[in-house]
Image 1: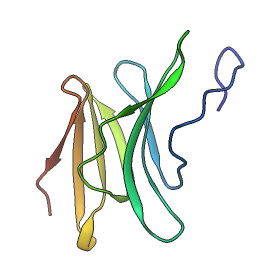
Image 2: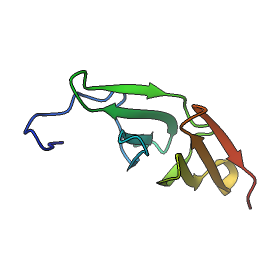
Image 3: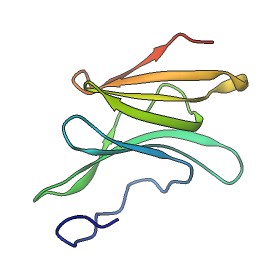
Amino acid sequence: MRYGHGGHSPSMNVGRIGCCACVMSDGRFAVLGCSFGNGASISPFEALLIGDDEHWQTLPPMCDSLAGIVCAAVAGCVIVAGGGGHGRLTVEIYDEVLNRWLRLPCD
């Protein structure tokens, strides 16, 4: 990844395939989820802090490991939806102020 000043961003803590990303309300670049070639998925969540002390910050993992996720940052929250266990859709919200995930009830 390249950005304005022509430098390279530091490496993430977890290698990823099939992840999603968004820009959080405070300007951090968030990357969520990943999957492996064998179909397994995990729920890591990292955000890139940009500036003099540029680094990836590990944030609390999602409640569930989701596959095929999409995300959006809205009003201080990161909303993530994807396939949970047993083929069900799962929706979770990360509250940036509280630094925690909430699972939404849905079918």
